[in-house]
Image (cartoon, rainbow, N blue to C red; front, side, top):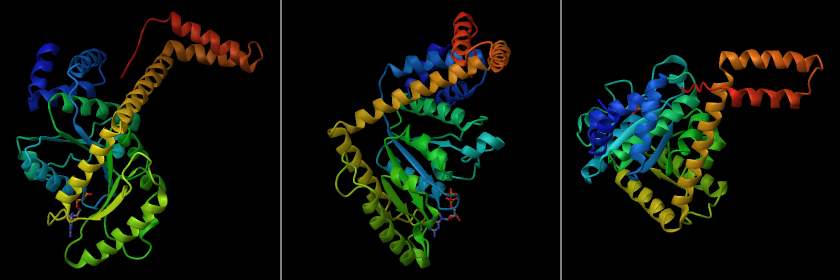
Length: 331
Ligand code: GDP
């Protein structure tokens, strides 16, 4: 199929075309990359914008149960929902969250939903760059909400905040030292902390945990760009479907506020600049990794070590070689 046709079908909201387009951006082949770049450039002209929500939490806190229940609420409101994942473990093992077909059964079958596992790449940076492009493709395909899930292990939250408008942290009720397991950095980026499993025997523990987080969040910061009662902590039950509609209302309030005050647009602009720099860094490193350049680096490094060149002069010489080179290798 021609890229133009794929682009048109994608813009018509066709889910199979969206899946094919994402496969194209995830491909490591140079010819696919060229097509992917053309496709992304084409569809980005349309300027559609979804509500991008980042979601993180440790394994077992109920992320997939939450996404399923929350996604069904959104669909019930007439919205189309896409779910993507940034899985740092897929970078190592080739496996991925969302890969398990039994997760999100109802949502997976809904025609208004689109679910896509994390791409398998060797670096988290690669996973993140391709997921960021998948987010753009979902927006172009007319999805109203894009949920980007990641496992709470640190680095991956940061990359997810770079592609989302709002960040949710999902926690399970805890006894004792509630805050111990959550890294400070994650607390700093969370807009809403959701304490899940507020049902049955766990309900009172969840309420306590929620109260603890509410006071901890007050200590963490006041963000000048947000309403005074954000960031906030809420207790929910993904299993019993309680508190989810309220949480969605809070998310909408926060985004409406940020849109009105220009912070939403400023954040998107800063993100675009961030990804431009990431792509640039990656492209330059890929060129330096070419065998021809590696040989030159070793050669010049040896000469610098022997005192034949200053480090500065050697670096400048290498950059001249890079300018002279023609092959641009991208992944
Ligand atoms: P994930 O690893 O974060 O995606 O977590 P899952 O959604 O797979 O859930 C892990 C376990 O917690 C499963 O056994 C779920 O049934 C259970 N669980 C998820 N949400 C809730 C909830 O709201 N209440 C209770 N009691 N259990 C839940």
